[in-house]
Each structure stands twice: as C-alpha cells, then as structure tokens.
Length: 65
Image (cartoon, rainbow, N blue to C red; front, side, top):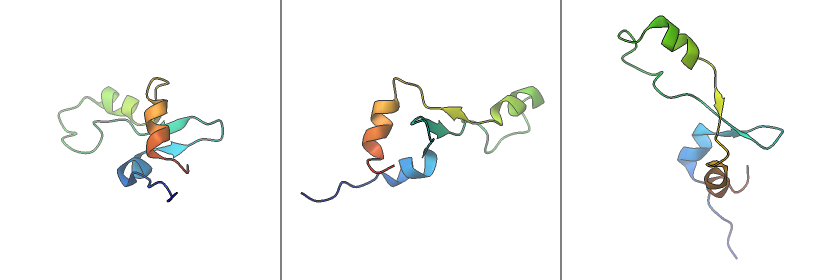
C-alpha cells in the first residue's frame, strides 16, 4: 500500500499541539486592515484551536502530523 499524501494547504495552516489539538490562525488578518477597528484587529491577533467538530477532517488531511 502506498503512503498517504498530506494535503499541503492544510500542512501550511495547521500545527498539531502536544495534547493532540490543532492550532490555527484566525481569519481576516491579512489585508484591508485600515477599515477594521483596532479592537477587532487586537482580538484577531492570537491563534485559536480547530473546533472539535472539524478535528476529524483535519486528521484525514494530515495523516502524519
């Protein structure tokens, strides 16, 4: 049986933590920032975790993570 391929887009977006959860960046932080309020940009700064309902999908995209 051949090795499974990793989805490269997912590998760039998600990192697995020591506890088994996946870390991710928050959306809406890259461009057109001048119309967003400072408070909104500040709250988007920190990362987040992948929701438990999406963990199974990320697991299948990253078989060797």
